[in-house]
Image (cartoon, rainbow, N blue to C red):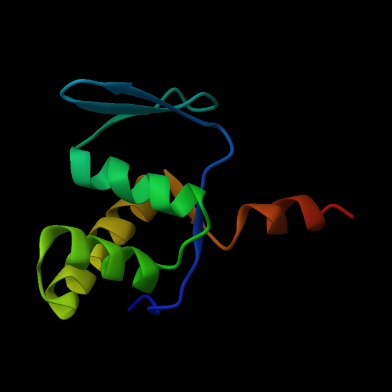
Length: 101
């Protein structure tokens, strides 16, 4: 199970294009394309800002007037899917830069 305080970042080779009805995420290295629904795209925006899974769940629970525990379960499930698809990676984006130094 993913820790509530876990931080993730978008894969560095990922490009996301937003449309009226949803978003497309393209890994420019593998050419894998994934359609993101509104909720998944909203979560990637929070991840881009460096928010933890718990922060995202709290913000979305407030925005949608839902219980935090229910939203946290949903956020965790989406995070697991995004990880499996290679859209996000664990850790903050700056960590990948520091590894080469």
